[in-house]
Image (cartoon, rainbow, N blue to C red; front, side):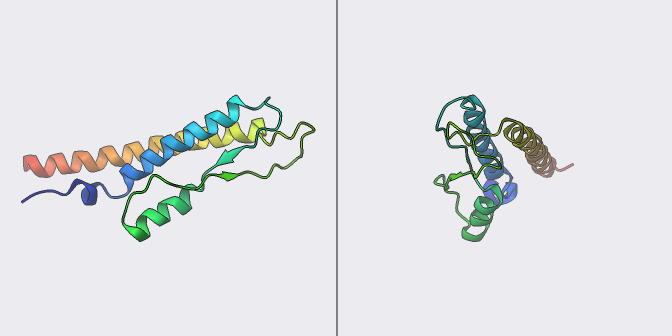
Length: 116
C-alpha cells in the first residue's frame, strides 16, 4: 500500500514554505527601514492557508499587501521598526511550531512504516 505524503503531512509542509516566504518579506521590510518611500509589505498567512485548504492545491502565487502605518513618516516610508521586529519574531516562533508539527507527523509515519 502506497503512502501519499501530501495527504499524510497535511498543510504543515505548505505552512512551512509560506513561513519562509513571509520571513523573506519581513526581512526586506527591516532592511529598508531607512529607505525613503519604501512601502512595507506582508502576506495574510491565514488567508493564504485557507485558500490552500479550500482548493486542495498548493499555489505559489499569493498576494502581497501593503501595510498601512500607524504613524505617517515624512519620507513616505511605511516600515515601523518595532512592529516589524515583533512580526518577524512572531513569524519565527510560528515557523518553529510548524517545523515541530511536521517533525511529529514524519516520526509518526516512520513509526507506522517500521511497525512499532
